[in-house]
Amino acid sequence: MDILRRNVGLTLFLAAALIVALVLGFFTHRHLAAAAEMKNKAEEQEKVWTGIQMDKIKVNDENLDVAKSNQTVARENLETLRQELFRRSFAPSKSYSGVECKNVLRAETRRMRETLERAGVAIGAVGEFSFDSVLSSEDLPDETTAVPMLTKQLEVVRELVGIIAESQVTDLNGFVREGGLNVAKYQYYDVIPFQVSVAGEMRFVKRLVSLLQANPRFFFRITHIELTADDSAMGSAGAYPTAGVGPTGGPATEGFGGRFRAGMAPGGWPMAPGTGRTAPVTGREGRPAEPGETPVKARVPTRDELTIPFKDMVNAVIKFDYVEYHDPNPTPTEAR
Image (cartoon, rainbow, N blue to C red):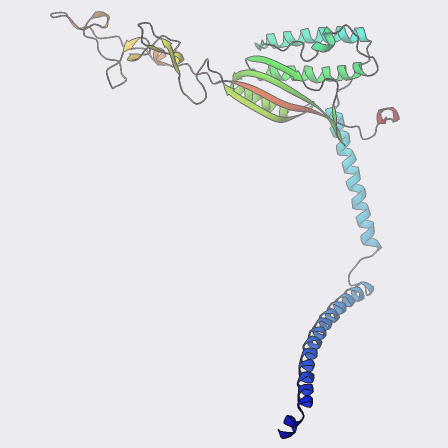
């Protein structure tokens, strides 16, 4: 100890050397651990490649041939599917002069009106079924660009009118072919948006939507449906709004056509207070019996008189797209 006291510098040097040795040992241990981990990973990779070389993991020409065959089959199936989609969704165009095109459009819109009238569909503000601008214009449609597109779209419109007639809706109040002759083009198909406004019972509106989606000739894709209740009849919620004035000044119930008032049963018979049933009448014409007068019992209403007509009427705005798939094998002219 005396030697250490007399050699303070040596003591400090030994202490510093010890600290440095501890630090170096700590970092050396960490690096050795990291090196061991890297060595294990390298050995695992070496085992994988050794297995590949020894053909234990079969990456060979046979596997590559199978993969190429699957790729070829997938491409052929895609081409077959595209051909089928094109065949089904294709609306053919016709070659007409500008005058002939206008005459055809005018004649076909008249036939479509007759189709709807025969089906009992009332026609509202539908104009010429989206061809108004062409038929009202003094210019003739171009034979090379406008006529083929117009005749193609006419095929689609005729199909839509037939679907509306088949659905048995009550009214067709609007028919819009959005975009005119312009179509939205995608990689595999083109899109023409439509919008129709109809009115009728809910079941027939549902039928219209089903017919659009299950159409065997063309593809129609529903994008938006808006329903509103018809205030002129009982709504789907089952409520009867009261409005107007009854025959004797009381409030009339609109659901019954304004023929009844508070305290009256269907058929105009008085109700017993608080029961909702027809009350016996002690005097004639519903008045209290006079002294000595023989009471007269009120006639019980029939079942038909108690039946409330139910009309689940709605107005519907339906937006949808006509989707036409591209020909997978177009001619050079079609490709351009």
